[in-house]
Amino acid sequence: MILILSSLLAFYLAWNLGANDVANSMGTSVGSKAVTLKQALIIAGILEFTGAVLFGRNVSETLITGILDPAQFTPQMLIIGMISVLVAAGIWLNVATLFGFPVSSSHATVGAIAGVGSLAFGLDAVNWNAIELISITWIVTPFVSGLIAAMFYSTIKRFILDQPNAIARLQQWIPWISAVLIGIFGVIVFPTIAESIQSAIHLSIQNISLILGVVAISTLSISAFQNLQTVESTIAKFQVVSACFVAFAHGSNDVGNAIAPFAAIVSVLRSGTVQDFEIPIWILVLGGTGIVAGLAVLGGKVISTIGEGIISLQPSGGLCAELATATTILIASRYGLPVSTSHALVGGVVGVGLVQGLKSVRMETIRAIVLTWLVTIPISAIFSGIVFLILRSIFIQ
Image (cartoon, rainbow, N blue to C red; front, side, top):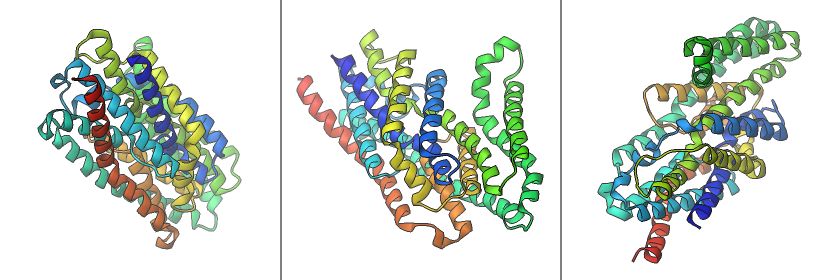
């Protein structure tokens, strides 16, 4: 019964992660009309599921052990605690999604874990340095991404969009846009793919990544050269690819927010201890399926907020926002800093809007989004704590 209940709750959390967090990867592409909403749901669904199942195992137990020490829990208390996390994070993401607000699933999960740890063993049981670091990155991430997006968009606007011969200028710039895509997304996505085929062809991960990146972007560049109709329609081809990369990387990285608590429960049920957490393939499939289902059913609202609610996007602006998001995540990963895809993408969209002009940014949407960011960790912590106290009073005498 515990396994069935916790698996349903994990699916529910993954469902809401798909409806909210995953929508970020396709929001700008839909808003800029590079793809339709239906196409975005199909593309993101396939790539998120593939990334989650094939490479989601790389998400380790650090999501749990980095916030609190599971060894302080008895097996029964850890199970109750992780169930509380699944309930609290899932419901908060559900509420945010219904209002169309993009929030961070990692912050919801971290806040829920901190709430359980605080009530189980006191405030000293929580690694508040980790919480502080997350809070700092929450503040810094949108500003960094916004600055990078503004730089990218200013360059494209000055040297391509504002030129009288924009099509000819874009043709000159296609190799450079391709190089940027290879440089940014190649470092983020392709090394993950390369690790799985490295042993078979005896090449370094860097070489495999370069080959994969060159083949993919070269094919796209040839297609763009052959179909130069308008500037924005050509740039839209590159934006679809960048959105695909973001979706794949997101699936391989953030699926842990939904399945890590469940994996801890399964590990305890299997071994009877609170150590040596593992993530078997069937849990990855469960998480990937939940993500796709949530994205398909409820993802449209957050996609609309990201793609249309902040500014009116064209493919050029959408591409710059996605490039800025990927660059910000890459920089943070290089230094081991936890960041939020939601925060980075919203910051990137705002950065593009500021270059277009402050009046183009819908500040009421920004205020609502920032408010949900501010309350995510404390609400998740309080809610998970309440659920934990109720379950503990029922099952632990």
